[in-house]
Amino acid sequence: MKQISTVIVSMLAGALVGGGAISVLHAQAKPPVYQVTLQDVSNAEAFNTEFVPVARATIIKDGGKPVASGAPIALDGTAPAKRIVINQWESVEKAKAWYNSAEYQKARETGNKYAKFTIFLVEGVPAK
Image (cartoon, rainbow, N blue to C red; front, side, top):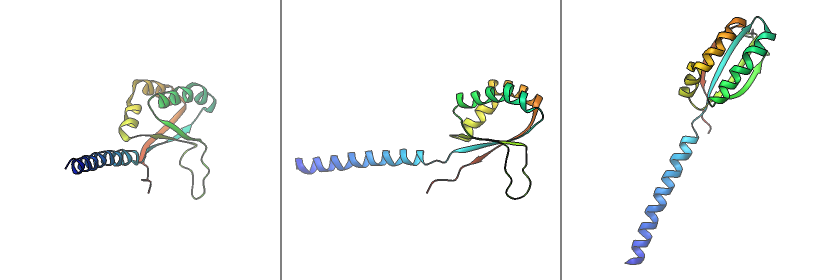
């Protein structure tokens, strides 16, 4: 009887650990969110010295990851802006929190002097 109880307890413990591991793996499988920014820059020198370092620091501080930045290379059609920036975020909520933060909004006051911005989020594709 003691052996059967030990086997049953071991099976239940294994099921709990396995279920927990599966939920962790599912949480990790959630695709990232990408923030795409189209920038039409009027004064590149001032923009790159006064705005970009401050804005990038707020992105990194708030958990974003810079992925790409620069002039687009059009393969088909016309590029929508002179400069495109892509940042990766863990979630839509984290990206919105960064965008609405006082630090980024202050940086944008400077950025708005030198560029027009279009910013949007797009969810990544789940890994299979």
